[in-house]
Image 1 (tube, rainbow, N blue to C red):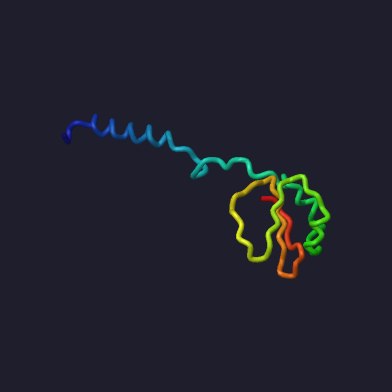
Image 2 (image 1 turned 30 degrees about the vertical axis):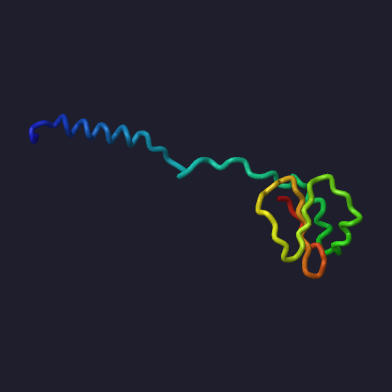
Length: 99
């Protein structure tokens, strides 16, 4: 065994081949495209923040709408085209966002 160098050469060659398969860079898959920044039109409705919640009664919305009252439980599903409007304890609109 001590006089047979072929065994060590084969092992070294296998290590070199494995090392050649390693890629530099990230540790996982590349991130996919993120959500559309304003798919629900929330940017154009930021003027509602601070307004009374009753303002919503006179408005019509073409997109799916979810009004979230204080303490209300909501599902955590993300729908980028859904408009969410949060109402605070003073019955005013506190946040307008997509999701």
